[in-house]
Length: 90
Image (cartoon, rainbow, N blue to C red):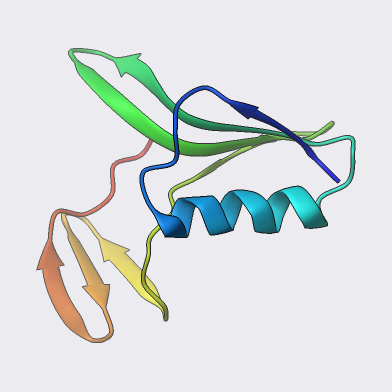
């Protein structure tokens, strides 16, 4: 079971479910940090989850939808529908 460090509060059920899922399935060598902000240039980036492992760090953006999501530039395709406002690399 991974260690969980809550910096902020989960914003929705999808985030709570993702935290519990990873906590219960990752080994004790992993740590999950959740709901924090990072300054980036003049912006503030909201980070849902950061998973620290002995080998790397994973940044996870939790979405409360099911299915395949493709991101192309500033557009994301959810269930074959184009939606403006793509993801931004951290």
